[in-house]
Length: 311
Image 1 (cartoon, rainbow, N blue to C red):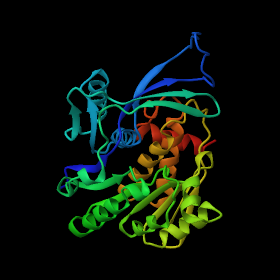
Image 2 (image 1 turned 45 degrees about the vertical axis):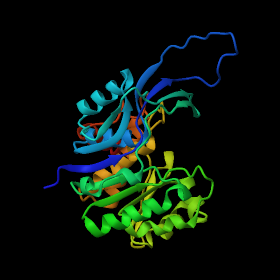
Image 3 (image 1 turned 90 degrees about the horizontal axis):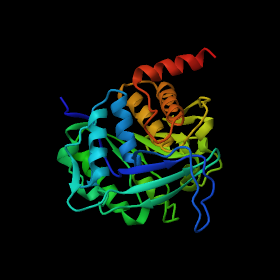
Image 4 (image 1 turned 60 degrees about the vertical axis):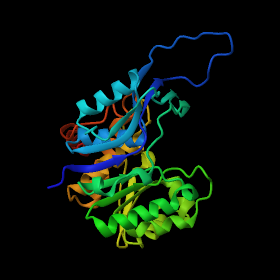
């Protein structure tokens, strides 16, 4: 028996959400807004919280400060069902804060990283990971840590039976190096958005990119935003259209999709069903402020999907 369903490590911070703002007041002026809310943030943390809401047992390795926000985040994760035994509290350290300005078209951010360094792949214990069924990887930054990720994945494959999902994320270095293909044989689920897939693959379409990525043996999943998502394994392609909702805030939609899809994968669902679960979680997460406040329970997710089918 495994202690956890999923081992998650990475970023966690407090989000300050200011909706319906498309410009800031000039110097010396004060504008009032009708609403301003706080919510947990950080892609890895949102993924872990989503899995917990679906009924899984995730553990989260991360760092918060010894302050009001850090205490709130730890309590929120525990109450949601995330094991925080690996969540570190930095003494005399400040938790990161991200201010999100949103309107009906886009988002922009002001971010304070805080004093709590996000754990990197070199700090993840293979022994601890082996106590989980699955590990979800984020935090890849191309030449900065490519070799460390490759070494970790190789060791994980040699020494454990843990399955792996990997959300590549945006390449802030701008390299989009083909070396990333070296990681694919060690993955079970590869997750990218459409733009990332086209940059890395140099292909014309997301479908072509997924076929190319999956030739290494993994299941390649491409998130297409409002258009839904597709995945490819062993030369076969599945796709599902997105669900129509009134979007309030798209923060964390990709991480919410990841949680729904990985849930389906770990439950042994067929790829088309896993895509449907991912699309449902991503859509519902957009119906409220923040990346997790509207993330559904499994019961609500299935009811939403059934309702959409009948429309």
